Image 1 (spheres, rainbow, N blue to C red):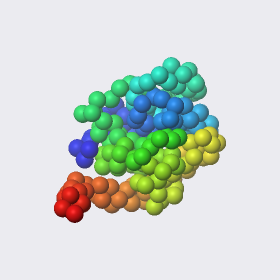
Image 2 (cartoon, rainbow, N blue to C red):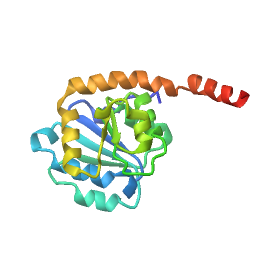
Image 3 (cartoon, rainbow, N blue to C red):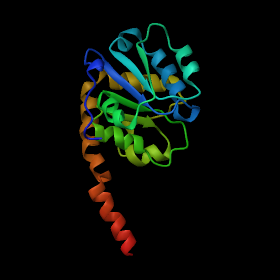
Image 4 (cartoon, rainbow, N blue to C red):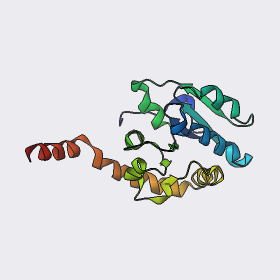
Amino acid sequence: FRSGKRLTSYNRSKLNIVFLGRLVQRKGVIELIKAYNLLDNETASKTRLIICGKGPLKTKAKYIVSKDRDVIFAGYISEKDKANYLASADIAVFPSISGESFGIVLVEAMAAGSGVVIGGNNPGYKSVLGQQPYLLFNPKDTKAFAEHLKMFINDQGLRQKMHSWQEEAVLQYDIDKVGKSFVEIYKE
């Protein structure tokens, strides 16, 4: 994922908020769109929401987008293109409601160099982001979720501070480190 490069079509004229996942209920895409719709127009005008993935909620997701919002449905993203979409994110958001045993997508986004990675407050995502409470939110509380997005959109200093923390935190998941741990466990 370190090889990810920002896509030129998603230039820096706006902040890119990227969701990458299946369009199913537990991944929280509907909650994300509802929260994005609640942003005030000034805040929303600084951003574009890029939804990557396919699934049964695609039609509903498209239907509920406010007409005055810049939302792109990029569709299915291949494994080879995933890192580039994540590298294009100023804010990578994963609003999973439940069912996450570990936040591999969070680690992938951090490794790809997403500006900041935020996630739904569930046990799997908490295991990756829990040391920084600002990075977790309740996706079911739409108003609070919208305020959380607004905070990251408007506070470049906070985004940078959390990005710096994430650059360090992701190193613990590197294969050189994890691989050695597995070898030690197998030796035992």
